[in-house]
Image (cartoon, rainbow, N blue to C red; front, top):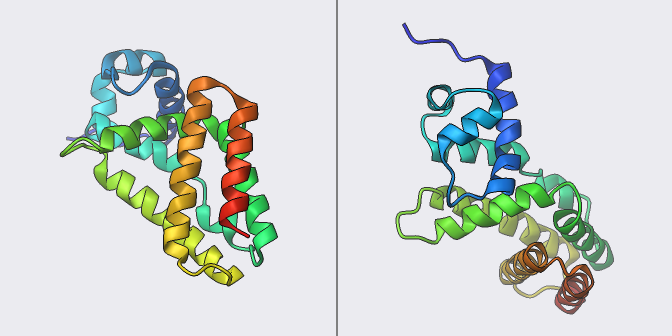
Length: 185
């Protein structure tokens, strides 16, 4: 008879996975050391999640901000610029920086042909593009909201990655401000 899932233990595991990967990296992720750090066994991780990849996707899903809520009340260009600046700052320096560090590793791994994270990456990018394109449509001054949303998301993601690698807050914050200001007038 299969062992029932302990939902509290599952939630506790998910809470620790993103931090572990941010500290140790995705490329060398092995279930045994991860399980030891989380106070469980690799067998239990497989029991709860099936595969290492499914574990990471489940952990990232708990970290994903409600993008629709972030941009829901934006109705003019100034508000959208401010919201994007706040979002970028939170992901460079604030509470979002740990999960963004892991997300960037997952997006990189999704570039490999047949990568295990491709479906997750496509969905994550798609949700962000659609949500930001909706906000751009509401402000009414953008001729191709989907393309502009793609430009902003890809550009800001690159700037955030630059910051996480170099630690240069001043330069990357200026670059993010410039991208946002020049894209949303």
